[in-house]
Image (cartoon, rainbow, N blue to C red; front, side, top):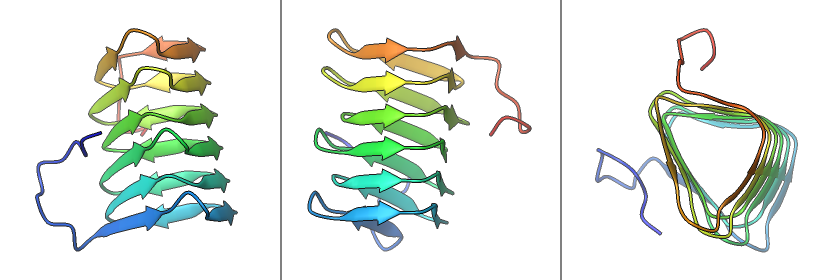
Length: 119
């Protein structure tokens, strides 16, 4: 899985590994890699990548979002959302660009008419 990013620097990358659980909202100015679980809203100033073992129960906001795991909540991206094979998204999706791989599961509404109010 590739991190969708125009910034090659990893100094602002936060990682939640597969043995970690966050109970509560999570926010960072940088990018985020999730392989564990988060029960709360997630907001980043950069990109979010969810690995196959990741699960988020809450709203997700970022520049670009790659979903390989599960999200139960709405997703807001100012750029691109990628739904990878075998991912699960149960919630509404707002993005300028949407990529859906064969085998991805999506239950909700999608809109590609984003604006600053939604993100």
